[in-house]
Length: 355
Image (cartoon, rainbow, N blue to C red; front, side, top):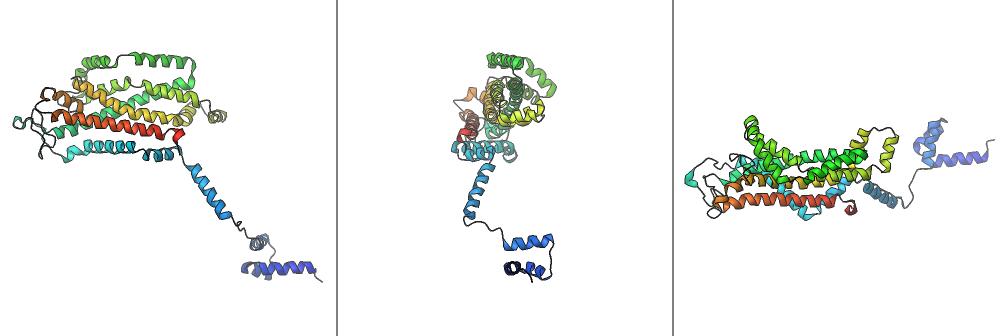
């Protein structure tokens, strides 16, 4: 006679299983796949009563852990009202400088009949002493001034990052030599050096590369070469701190070479201060170019820049103040908006203020 306990277990199994399991039981299946099917039907993996709340908490924790530094920085930057206002202003000035000359076809030809006209519907920013539309020249000048700021910033950031990374990572003699070089460049008088170099090399470069490209290359190179020191110090300080961290030791332990450690592990974690310094360097470069052009040693007269427009308006400030107001306003708005963006990035990339 069959075992009574076995029969009870069989009936209980039959009653508690699913239809597919019952069909297999009737057919006398005993394979491993069938046994798993019966087990799952008898003991379904139902979560506990409070599983929904636990899963919700777990999902929130994982979402919080998944947020990267850059997503937190973007969220913090959007909450900085002045930074957002500066970003929109800078975007407007950039788009106006790029597409404005294509839309606004104000005359840039010499016509003394329209000399020093005031603000009107035909000339929203008036005309200059030669009858040229000031708004058209301001839009063209924005292209040159903003381009100088961005390219000079890129050059200074690349030089400063390279020198600071080498000094901070290798230390010793390399650190001492590169920091002495940095101090030497900081000690140089920037403006007299720029004036002298431009005076000596502007005309030869203009003859060789053109009246626009030649001075552009010279001015951008000089601004970049004389403004990389602050970036180098920031990068060096970041490298000195980061190279002692555990993840750098782990990278060395798994056989990563020095190039991989510098460019893949340390440099990405040191980019926060560099981004802030790069943003502020754009405004500083625009001011430097405007100063050189205002002093007559920047771009030639036939290349409109905001600083050059100020230089052209020196003798007409009383009879045509609009010639001074609008170029100066562009410089002011551009530099102010860049500084606000830099302040917002500094606060957003500060880990003490991260969400």
